Length: 140
Image 1: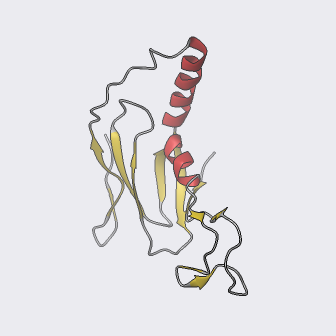
Image 2: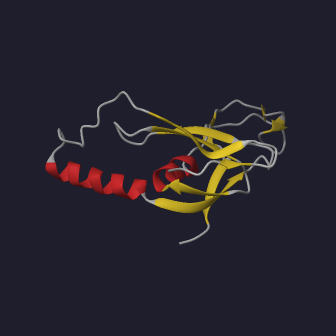
C-alpha cells in the first residue's frame, strides 16, 4: 500500500502511479550462475527503500517526473518529485537520478542563454554538464 502525497495546492508527488509491465519476469534464468547471483544481489540492493531529500539545481520551482523500472518484469512506477521534500524511494531509483548528466557538445557558445565559458568563446571539447537532479540521503 502506497501513501499518496499532495501539496497544499493539490499537486501529487512521490509515487503517483504503478503500471503493469508486459515484459515477462524471467528471474535471470538464462544467465550463467555467477552472473545470475550478482544480478540477484544487485536487484535486492536496488529494491531497498531509502529516505532521501530531492534537490534540483535550477531551483525550487522545478520538478522531476520519471518512470522507474530497473529490471525486466518489474512494475513500471511513475514518480514525481518536488525539491525540498523527503521521499522513501528504492535505492535503484536514487542511483539512476544521481547518475543523470547531460552531454555538452563542443562548439557551443551559450547554453540556456548563458555563456558556456567565461569569455564567451566556443567550447573546445565535448564534456558532461553538472547534475540538475540529486537525491541526498536523510537517514543512514
